[in-house]
Image 1 (cartoon, rainbow, N blue to C red):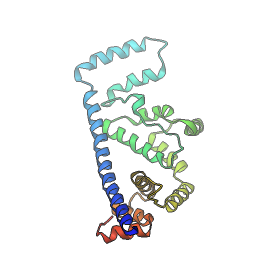
Image 2 (cartoon, one colour):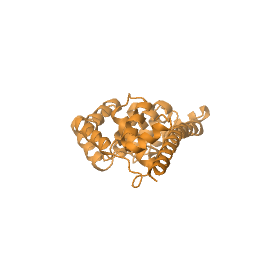
Image 3 (cartoon, one colour):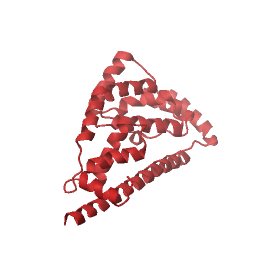
Image 4 (cartoon, rainbow, N blue to C red):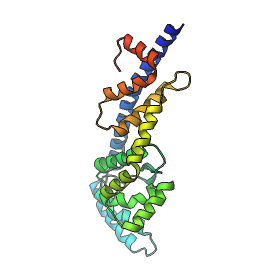
Length: 230
């Protein structure tokens, strides 16, 4: 009957909320663990310094060596670990909020691995792809070399403007949970990411309440009747 079905849906949705929170916590722990692992694994030992110096001298004698390779060798001793290109995030400019994740990931690299700002700026040409690549090339041509903090400002100005906020707000408001159509975990995380990107200072409890209101009257009432707080 309707009451039994609604109760089942409420229990299912609450279970997905709890799983999503655990998954987020585990995901953050996995990222931190990976960073710590590669930092320890690739730490430059003191005894390798003379070898690095000889390599630099040898590279300087190779007239046909690329400028980018010389730059990497020149800066290699300045930070704890030089992530390979495939370990860096890319940015296409085509997602709903992937500019936020792009900036956060690079900021984490910079902080955890002590990567110099000038090295990050030099990497950007390889990290922008698709439509964002065209935008970057035009900005680089018009403004020349800039620090990563200035590039962050440009990225936010381009992809987190009033038009983006209006569009994201509409996406969130128009998303109504349908137990027959939506996968609870995917739907919940999608709305949570949308809400968090718009309201970075909002508490997690308030974000959960905003999402719960979008689940339909019967489902919301059933969850609250069970004494379960979102």
